[in-house]
Image (tube, rainbow, N blue to C red; front, top):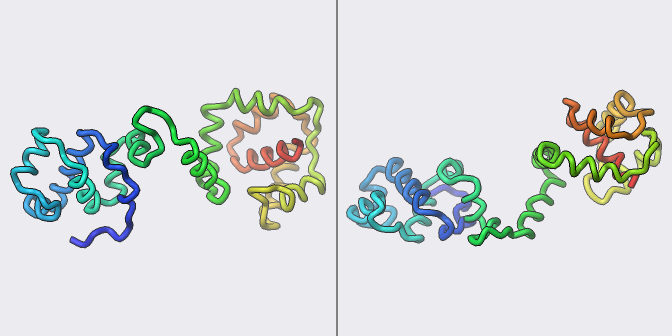
Length: 214
């Protein structure tokens, strides 16, 4: 069998895998290749395979690493739970602490990945709504939202990240702003309205405007 061309498995810290996941990985390779072929490519005896699968002996790290090379990354994700994947990728340490630089680097990808950005925004709205309200509540009261040249310049030239790059996007933002936000007073009710609006692009426009106000 030809190995998968991608080297996703090289990012995996196999030491972080628990016994159940190890057995599940080994079983998947055995089912996929057949018992005899699996022992051959993994460099183990049939007796060792039996002992590993039945929990008589712990499966060594090097066997698991070789086994991963015969799985697709999607198969690995099916087998291993989310928190354990964070451990084997080094994001969640064995003592439960978090590798914050790694998390922040992952979040920084949202500046160039629209899907990730939307996922983060949805997660923030669903889980940190009150915190977002408090942050937005720091803006002075009696602010009337108004599309103006300075706002356009801010989005297209002055923003350090996530600038609006095309005229089409700018025009779409303007259309949304004029329809839903123009002339509205910044208030808790307006924030709730934007957060719950079905068009997620409206949240983008609103977020740009809040940053513009700051």
